[in-house]
Every structure is written in structure tokens, then in C-alpha cells.
Length: 137
Image (cartoon, rainbow, N blue to C red):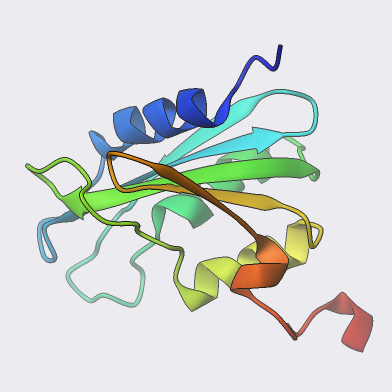
């Protein structure tokens, strides 16, 4: 049995949400990124008053994994809601995060979303068809 099931990754993403720094939007997002070697890296969104340096939870998780030498990934769980609320709707990655995923992940990379009741599994190809990538160089 797989150590990190969809539900286990969603649970880790929920835990990561607790570390979000979101004083401006009030939206806390957590991510749990699973590498092909079976390690998990967590991320929480990190806002800035000037907004441009704000980082999404997904990119924080990828940065943590990349800084440790990981370059191959299986899936990521992403959950978000108002800081003091539990998720009640799916919270898909933004366009910038999708492009970062495209840089490091295959078409079949899985994005797990939860609304607190169900888990939806999407592929990167479904979320970002016709993407711009390294094959264009």
C-alpha cells in the first residue's frame, strides 16, 4: 500500500495551512508535494504587503524540494480557505503555479484538490493544456 495516499497528502496540506502568512487576503493555503522517491515537502502561502513577492503554497513546496535536490515529482495536494475556516470548495493552483509545475512535472503529474468532503484528482495536462515549456527552445 502506498505510504502517502490522496487522503494522507490532503491531511498534510491541511496541516501546512496552519503556517500560512496571509494578513492581507486572509486566505490560508497549504500544499504537500510528493517526490518520486517518496519524500513529502510542505508549503504554505507567504504574503507580502507589496504583493509582488507573495509566494503561493505550491511554489513554496517546490522550492523546498528543489533546494534539497529533488527534481522528480508524483503529485501535490492543495487546500485553501479563509484562515479560520476549513476548506469548503476546491482551491486549484493559480496560473503561475501551474507553469512552475510544467517546468518540473510530466503531463500525468497529479494535483489533488479537496473541498473538505471529496478529493478531486486532476492531471497537469488537464489543468494546463497547450502549455509553454522547454520543448519550445
